[in-house]
Length: 111
Image 1 (cartoon, rainbow, N blue to C red):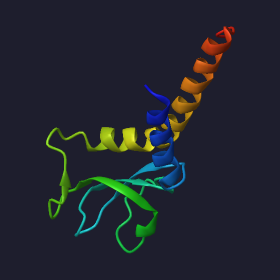
Image 2 (cartoon, rainbow, N blue to C red):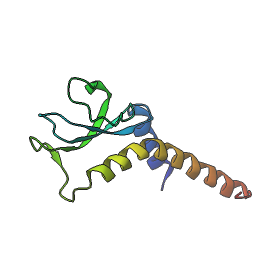
Image 3 (tube, rainbow, N blue to C red):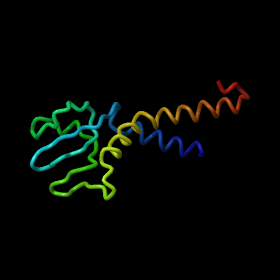
Image 4 (cartoon, rainbow, N blue to C red):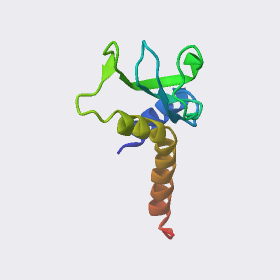
């Protein structure tokens, strides 16, 4: 991967809502069984609107009714977990790629 590609990924990371991100399960008559990515942790009580702050939501992987967001493979929880994890993992991976490149360039030790 070229450095300009790494820089593009880094710019996207920096422009996104700050970490950490969490998976949230919410439930109401409008967004029935909503699986979302949020800037605040899940409370475990599947809040109903308006008892959650919609401004904390970053993404949704399932909104069943009406069917706004609904992955055909039914991996809503897995997709939400991946999105939330990627928010912190991608910047760390960029740092690791650059660290390893610096070691290669300097002939350094990989430990």
